[in-house]
Length: 547
Image 1 (cartoon, rainbow, N blue to C red):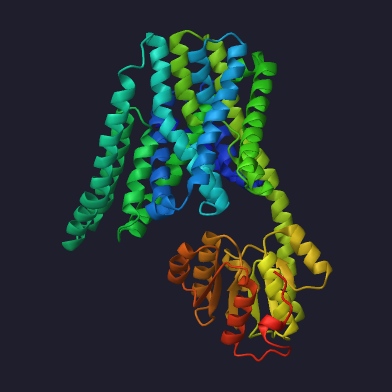
Image 2: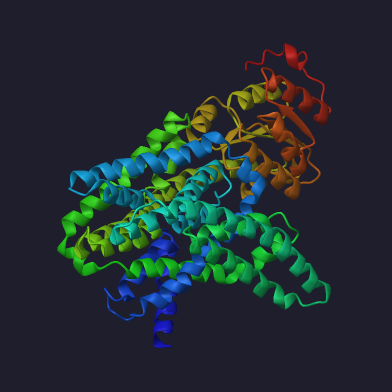
């Protein structure tokens, strides 16, 4: 009981302090674990009991992510996204494995070490994305795809590490893994998509709603146990179960039911990671730990940035992705532990690598926290700029809000201004906003998927909203948010592809323009139609819109 109280007290105190400092609760929980754990002050010694609860936290975090993403979104990731994910894992494994081979490790051992260190922390990355409210953004989709591919690789890596210690071959286990994995996935899909909804409907039919949560927990934990049993990760089973449940009518209720204890369990996970940091070994091998930690973060981030750029992702997005996934993984501890049993690395060597992985998580959090503070300064200035709309023209109404000031948004805005219409433009590129404002254009920095930004732009008094961003997911979220905040205001949306029309329509868009050579012209025509305004110049096609 005393250890439980110590863990909860440390959880609350460190999470609160680090959140107050703007460094995030996760960093605080990592340090809390190191302080109270067996290698710190030794206040908590039963690390295994904490680790069991912590593993449940990861399981429910992945289940919740599955609920949010839905199978349809997973299909829409596209080949380029999965190419990025596979390239990241294979090239990073090869690079780290090559470095390990230079230190004398045999090819098989070097490959396992490379794979272990190529993985990124699923729990940490998803928690950070959730804190930043970017889980469903392009950054979130890319990160989740990479983490999914890594999670699939966890099982084979663990088995390979065990084979090193047993000096076995891979002839039989690979076949068993594939066949067993396919069978388990089919069972999870059937249980989550059909059995669970049937059971929940049956229970709700006679008022036994209190049993709905235990039934859900049973299915999720069974899915996790099944995938772990055949050599895949437990988190993968939970994620698949979440994807299946996401398409049922119980999605929101289940998410609400698991939310209260999910945060506590995932917090215990980060404390358990912190408890594995042996401060004594870290100090004895301080130089080696520092070099390995920094090399791991820099190498992984640099490789991912280069791969993303090679696949023609934007520089800023590539850098964000590299920083976000530059740390080691919770599964690295398991794989390295199995490697230690093989005897190919001595105990101190494994400890140094383990400490380096834990510190890489902390470094990632600190980099993100500092970057977030810089972004908050920009967004704070942007909020002030948005507030000027109210202070300078508080009675403004019937104005048109344009979201996105890229090539299409810029051409559309210039035409609307030439018609004498009141326009407020929102864009999330600080440099683009600065240049536009220097030319006297009413462009303001802000993320239009956030309700406070749309409110600052007076969505409640707007005549209509035009979403001109090239990202269909961002567009759909903006349309849905606008529809909720100001259902009276029509929304005209730009669809990058024909396949995005249904998504935008479902979100609430009244008119949709599919990208073509005349996107800006067509958007302008629909604005004139919805605004019931006669152009003061000629018609939209004669207005000299440049695209």
